[in-house]
Image (cartoon, rainbow, N blue to C red; front, top):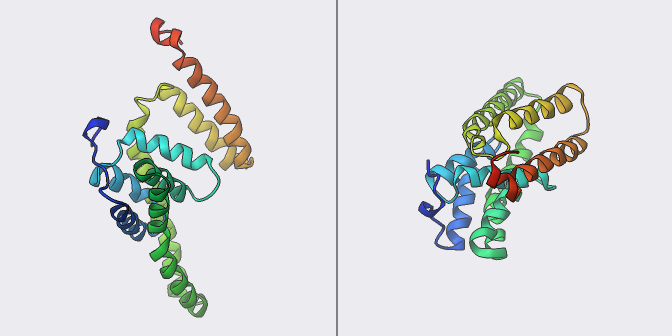
Length: 198
C-alpha cells in the first residue's frame, strides 16, 4: 500500500482512464466501491488510501451515485473535465448495455425460484464486500486529524440515527457533518497545531 503521494502513478491518457473505469465497473457486481479501493490504490496506484477516503467522503455527500461522483472527481484530477467525462463514460457505457440485457431476461424469468434465490445470494455477497472494504479503510482513520475515538463515535451515532431510529439520511448527514466539520476545524486551527492542544 502506497502512503506517499510522491510515489503515485497516473493514467497516461483519457483512454487509459476510460478503460480502467470500464474494467472497474465490470468487476463491481453488487457494488463497485468494494472493488474501487483495491484497483485505484493498490493495483493502479493512482491514489493513496487517505486520498481515496477523502474523495469517497465528498462523493457520498454529493447527490447522485457515490461511485459516479468518485469517477468524476478522479477523472477531473488527472485530465480536467474531459477526464471526468472519460471516467464516467467508462463507469456507465458497458454496464448500461449489460443491465438492459439482464433486465430483458429478468422480466421473463423473475418468478423462477432459482433466479430469485440467486439474487438474494448476490445481495448477501454485496453486503459482505462493502463491509470488507470498510474494514480495509479503517487504517486511513488513524491519520485523520479527528482521531479514532471521535471518528468511531460519529460512526456509532450515524448508525444509530439511520438504522435504529430511522431518521432521514439527509438530516443525519447535515447534523453529523456539521459536528465533524466544527471539530476538525478546531483541531486544524494554526494555534492548535503549534500548541498541540485541541
